[in-house]
Length: 345
Ligand SMILES: Cc1ncc(COP(=O)(O)O)c(C=O)c1O
Image (cartoon, rainbow, N blue to C red; front, side):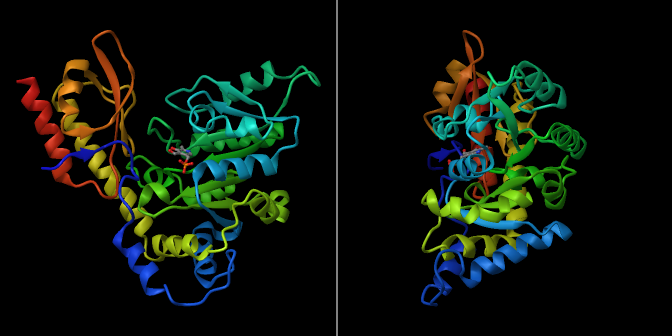
């Protein structure tokens, strides 16, 4: 078996159905800047999941861009974001949000998540006005950066607190497909549209070539969002490329099928790793796994597999991150498990 990468869920190009759709529509002339028929259809298909919320939907090329666009459009210059310290905008976006002039107030994550209590504590600790930046927007990710899930009750409690305290709620859905397709999930797209002011649906990590769909239910932000998109260089002339991919993902449920497959592969890998006697730092709920492996074993497995060594656990072992995807095959998982056994014996 050739070398395989568990580094992330975007190591391959795109699902063949998406490439096929791009090919079939290639010579059809379309209006530019997101007014093409495919983007309109994709918006309609996504909106169908949201009942009477009827949000605006915009397609952009990357997750960092989605976060920058939403946060910078929603906040005034003195307003701040509350986020878990493990949040993508905090640790992996090169200070992109801070570069728009907004402070991020970090709170300790609980299993990668925010809680009403942690948000409340951040509000109390950031109330000396006008000397402190004013908390105005709460950022969370589902699935989280450690692959865990928010339940409906958890998201509802956070949403309620946000409404009571005048905070906007943003859900980063880079891996929302994995979250919604997880066995334990009880949230729907409609719930999320109702409970948040804005969220985005990741395409890049679930088989699209690239692209994320921003969904905005907040009335005030909807009004002029397209100006923000254009001003930040995010309104693609060939918006059809993004719209078409989302039309394909949502036309017959490919989005959910691919995410479910990634989760199934993660569960298979997770049970093989725990059967081999290794523990995890976070429960495997979606397509990211965080087992603790001996450093000597890691070195040996790296000869055949790519994955991130996430952090040191103790002197002799480390937490690694393994990500399964729409393209992972059972054979990849089984080959990894076979290596664990080979080096254990
Ligand atoms: C939770 C989360 N948010 C945002 C992003 C950013 O996406 P991009 O790399 O497309 O900017 C990622 C990418 O890994 C992510 O995992």
